[in-house]
Length: 246
Image (tube, rainbow, N blue to C red; front, side, top):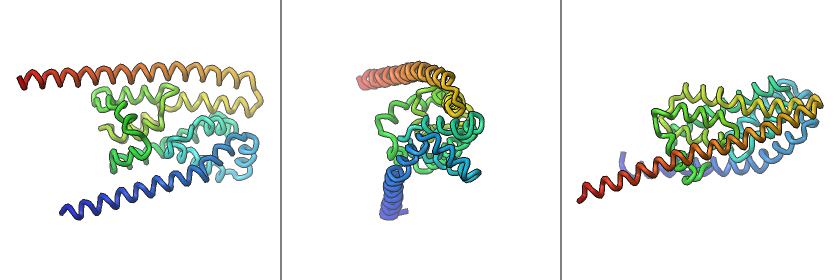
């Protein structure tokens, strides 16, 4: 393949990604914002779900998938709305199914297009902060922990994991199982609101806020620890190179 064909293919790929980004922005403005406003009105949302039956559930599944794809839309309102409209069990299952499907699609697309696709949604600085995920020996355990802890940027991590050597079956297990605790807390709280058990709902959301705060602290500690180790390795490598040059 000559350079002209390579440039042509690269231009087509970048053009396609640019159109996808534009499409995502338009959809977010005309679909994402109204969607969140709709779900944030739980009584109307539940009435709409009851009226549309299975189609209401499929529509909600699409909302969850869209939220993960865009990454900048918070997932908690959807999860609380799911608990309110469908109950804790069905709401949790719908949220997990939607996030799993979209996470698998993102994983496969990132494997195909690599960094140029990820940078459309995640800044390069943010990507560099997760450089420690390239550690193959600890990759699976660290990824599971980050998805298990409440308060971590799971949708951003979904894009970054595709840049690692992780295999698809492992990713499906992690994104399905590790997300369950954080989803359950939201759907249980939403279910409590739907059944007018307001005291329990307040307790659930208060406990979730505390756990999420602790999760953020743990997440920051993990990332800072690995960033510090990475910096130490880089300094050691530079010192070794300088000694070798002498």
